[in-house]
Image 1 (spheres, rainbow, N blue to C red):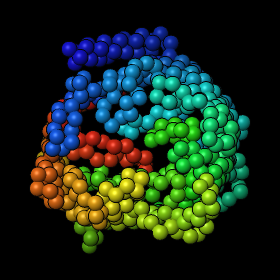
Image 2 (tube, one colour):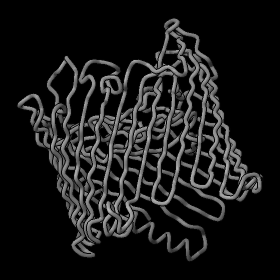
Image 3 (cartoon, rainbow, N blue to C red):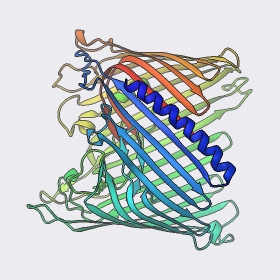
Length: 554
């Protein structure tokens, strides 16, 4: 019955938007657009994989974005329905309603918004408001936003509002400002040709009343940052620093230290070659819109991750979760195009990539329960994460390409995901994968991959689990006329130390694309893991059931 209502609603929206778009365009009354997203999952209990059933039988997340534009005005809203939220998404999203509404005016020199909005200052070290449905994050700010561009190369921005907190808003007021200057537009002759310098500065002020009966908390918390980005021919150098005044919160154990962060990136882009060296240091940089916020809620800032987004199936067993309360890390990324008709590139050429990441704790010398000192250039004793990976892609024929990838990962899983509780200890993994795409003709292609994971862990407190030991994984996906895709994938934990945990997971999927709409249906027994995007993570539970996904733009 629910599926019948869903199809009826989808058809109604499609017909309505088609008629209104034609009417609006013919009458010169502006333009109307939007998009629809629906996810629905059924749950069947499966005690061996740890999958739970639900009394609702089906859980779903849905959203509808609508936008109307007329001359310099834009009106937008998003209606959401979490009935009830899919497992892994915070259950506090349960409910329906308009979660986003915004009115914006834009001209050459001014932009003004009222309602909900998203923004980011620099790298996000002191402020980032964004929406990510995968992670279940929506920390939009509800208030006013003004952007001034009095002259070319100068942009001044100011915001004030409250941050979304599921179906309500934070108990704090956020006030923030940002300025960016671009030398190439302000003073074209200041630097040589093909050089450009962009500098910026930001501040964030948060007010929240003190309701803590045990501690005296600051009513106003202040953060500021500065940054630069220098482009010089094939080389770019950018850096940013940030300071957050003392901001005791539950997430940092009510620590009264100031927070600070430094980021540096050096890049080179040449003929067929590119490389980037990145370093950063963070100390007490978890900044929230409320002092008692946990998990992924009410995050005021964002720290860019120093790890590569791995494409291995079982990487979800040991991704990296940024440690905002203290880490120092380095990442080196190298990419090289193997030229056509060369020794390694062959007739059609190829691609080679190498990446290294290492992230460690910082040194903390505690003065008392609420303060410590941290020598800037001293490392802590704890390794959080180490990753060495490489990838080689060879274009064998016009219709066939092959990719080989390898990664060696060390992950301090207990620290990163269990607050130091002894579950897995340090996990050591080697992953090897082979991936290929073969195009039979313009209408049919086959994408496939096979992967193997070797892993060990040094925990002395080994309990039965569905993650330890070696894994074999595979995927086969047939594409028909770029509109129909049929796939099968599997994960086999054949090396689990516990005999009855040597489980086989599988999933079959059918997806169909037409115009701007994609609908897919899958069924399977899938293993749980951890989903991370840019160092921000959420748990993904094991499931046994059907999964329906629909996206459409109009």
